Image (cartoon, rainbow, N blue to C red; front, side, top):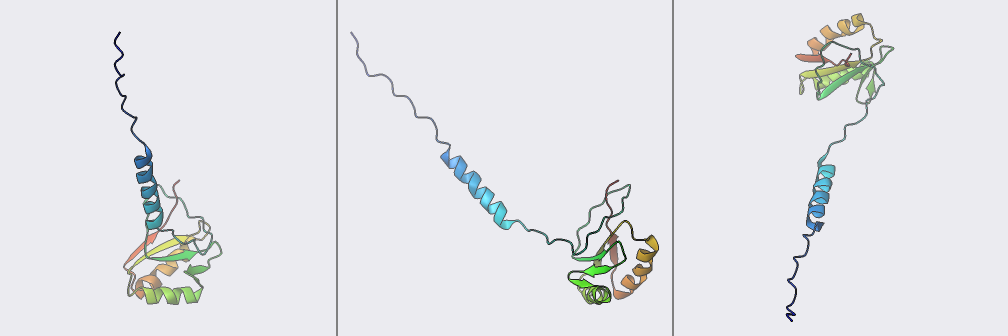
Length: 127
C-alpha cells in the first residue's frame, strides 16, 4: 500500500488587492471631481437643429420675463458685472429662456460687443 501525501493544492488568488485598487480609484475620482454651481435663474433654452454644447467662464442668464442675471447679480448690476469681466474673459455664454423674444437678445448683443466680448455663444437645447 502506498500512502503518499496528497499533492498540495495552490490556494486561490485573493481578490482583496483588486478591491483595494478599485476603492482607491473611486476615492481619487470623487476627490478630484468638480461640481458646477446651480444656475441663478430657471431657464428653458430654445431648441436648435445642431447642438454645440459650450462651457464658458462668463455666463449671462436671461429669464422668461427678460430678467438678466450673472452670478448673484440681477438686472443692470449684472450687466455692470459682465462689463467688468469682459477685460479678463472675452468669451461670453448666453443662456436665455425659450420664451424670451429674439429681439430682446439681439438688442443686447451690441452692448455686449461694445463692452469687449469678442466671442458670444447662445446656448440652445436639442430638438
